Length: 415
Image (cartoon, rainbow, N blue to C red; front, side):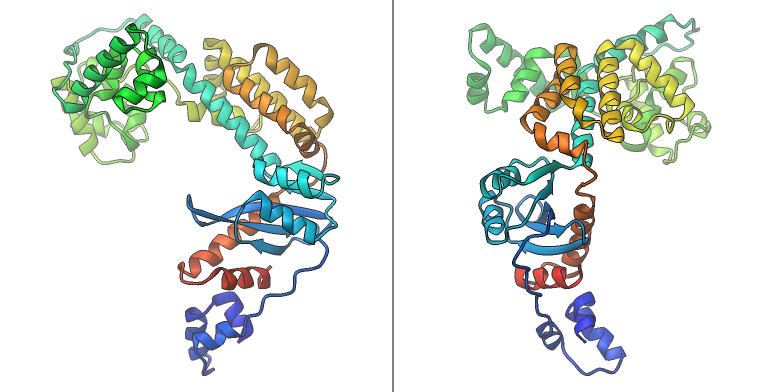
């Protein structure tokens, strides 16, 4: 019965016991569970990570013995003070594997300053991937200009040219024009971005976007009817075929190009092209997420066609090419465990790296010892992440009804 309660919990365990003809109730089953005693000394290699009781609201901390691959303890929060107190009460940790969170790092420096901190390699790659994707977003205009230039250079007979798209009288379009004029009027009067944001009750990022973006581009994003979801990758092809004279939605839908949706989005998009109420898709370019995927995948695993597209992107935008080279260099450092070369590569990146990559490199300098250890030592937080996934399974099976004490008991008993 104790094993049933450990692996299934109260109500599911009661149902199983009923089938096995073991007379018991959920309260009795849960009363059989007792949390094991936490060892007085911490494991030599300790892993620490957060998990969510309720995502975005409340978090806890799980402590894992990396060498034994089992959970040592569960803390009710993710505060640095709680973790530091636990480290003082349970001495003995020599290596501590963690993510890039500053709370755990400050707790380690306060409680066990002699311990070796190891930054997790997956989180390093994730941070690098985010920096590469930001670079691709910032230089998307370079790719757009090149794609439009290539499209305009192709000789093509226009049978049914598109009518000039007229701005539909939508509320969001009118609001965009009014907001653009208000922001630029206040900028002309010498007001700062923060002051404009307070006056107009806007976020400062919104004010900067209206300051740095042309009105035509803002209006283009305000047009209604812009296709989303499964149709979006095919809008450039549909626009080109419509321009060539193929205006029947049925003919466009029946053309096999990998589209998995229904014909209704195609009919709506073609109707919008006829009336000019949707923005015609411009030159097809790969999305920043897709370019980032090509860059971050191990070399040799990318398909030949995707390698050609990535080469075109690199030739079009030098900043994306530089971000790609730096990402590959960092990936080689991680794969070959050449942490001793990290500082040299950071200095090289500081000379000519795009802004997001530069910010990533400077962030590594703030946590240099732990990052160097993560690129050198064999330890990582992979086992901890596996336990976090298992905690999610246990937590969701309890449907939020149980207390922290019961959740902690089941986590420790199943580790």
